[in-house]
Image 1: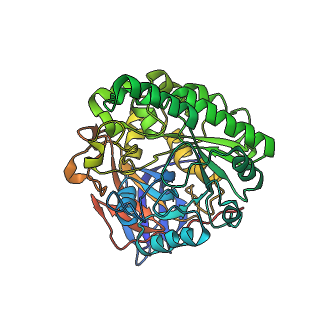
Image 2 (image 1 turned 30 degrees about the vertical axis):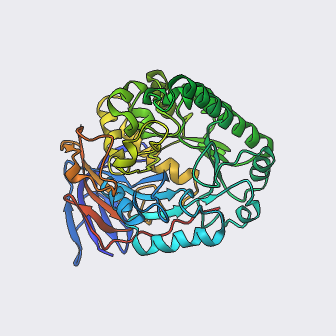
Image 3 (image 1 turned 90 degrees about the horizontal axis):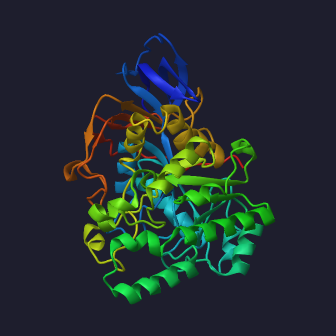
Length: 445
């Protein structure tokens, strides 16, 4: 672990922006203050004019390992993440094989320890028939249990009411849900297949995977959580209507039901299908400008608690298929923070709100130990951002294994200068430090 003295940064933390120095020693933030004096054997980072943020903690990614490594893997995607200022991630269980046993889950942790550039945790997967494995999940070592209440990969769709009741009643830790009503989607799919055959236009995606499908499923999850007093976290809210399922009249610490917004649902709208096609095909679908504006509003007024990416790469060849064969999902971790800063420059969010939703609240919501804030004694997971630089997204500078981005051709109005993971300089001056390894996240539960 290196020792660093960051000089003259504008620190964004806990609702304030202030200029200060910061000392990193032995992987932690040792000291924060003005005019800190150099010590022997530490490297100075001149940060005047740069903004120092706590590292982005992404609570929803799909890094595709094991079984789908032609699309992505833990090494490549974690390196893209640190290049984008994401220092910790929580990865989903719909790999091949699905992480439906404790042994398969542990295999993912073991692999991440070998190759991940960022800190990591992995969700335990739930299916219609693995409740006994779910109950073995250690809440201090695993971020949560993931339930797909809409079609997904392999044996991951949980559509039996009795199974859902059991999971919500008995889960030993937070339950995170993908909420889309399967019956509604199937009926809509049949309707548009009859109309268009196999040539369904990509613009029909938010009609097939409709706002009604999302609300029916999300409202049922909220109903079950209320019935069993469960700790529920609903992922990737994509509709205006869903935002009203969540409270903002109590502090996060008192909430049993929380929610997440994703970058793509706050950036793109259904008008973008004409130019982007399957490259913005996600589940849940990108929907209308009205939905986008209400999601942004809900982030600002705290109905929505955290921001994530749902990074889910596929190859260019896969994405070039027609509607039914083009898979849903896209890569986002390298450019998520830059997209949010563009929104800041457009007056959508403040820098303080971005830090709150990508770091502070994620750490609080998941009870993450010793991360998510710039505090003395906390892990030195930090990102320095230059708000006066620009980042043009080109194939030549994309780090995702899939080799493409939905932001290709866009020039962001800022740049990530440096990223520290556990006090080690993981990314600097456009280059990833290939030797950096993250740590397993732990939880104060």
